[in-house]
Image 1 (tube, rainbow, N blue to C red):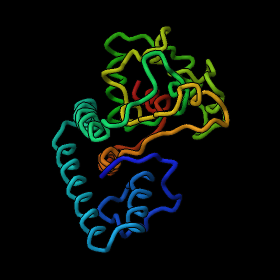
Image 2 (cartoon, rainbow, N blue to C red):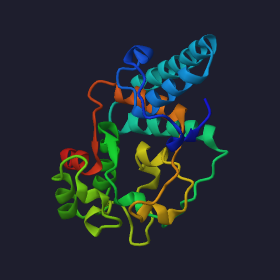
Image 3 (cartoon, rainbow, N blue to C red):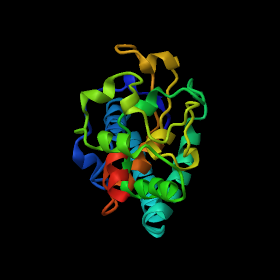
Image 4 (cartoon, helix red, strand yellow):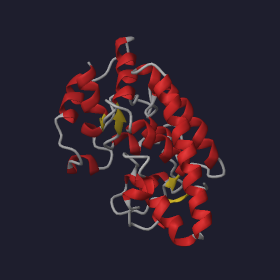
Length: 226
């Protein structure tokens, strides 16, 4: 299951019956499946679906065996890091201090929210006033698309532009793989080149299917947990 630039994939989504074992399959996974259905032979495509299901089931077993909350988030992140190794041939263009994506609406599972809340309870200070304002925004609010807006700045982003919870950062951050120039991420209308990693999408699809997992913005989830 090789990675590919997201922009190179078609916009149609896979019929739900192709991924009936994954009721909360991500858009990325569904696009990957329909893309391969169009280019592979029937036998090769069925083999791919079997491979996806095997990986999905293995992830589900591992996540369900982990303790709910921060413990399961850690297992989730360990597996996400391992799956991202499958795309190691792609070198991200962003570096420490490149924080364009740290001003976006990043979504997390509730297990990940527990892990982030743990960091705050351990003594990490965050701007709770700004956090509350961000949490009050409706999903996909246009306020999130203003490049490097101070009001959209992640409460875990340090003054040096580096993540203060890097070891506990959400899966959305871990699986983000952009190879276009960093300036494109903060320029309205610029073309970015995110790489889609199917193995990471399979894992996220499994995590989303766990009862009570849910997914919402960091701000909304953190306010709920704190």
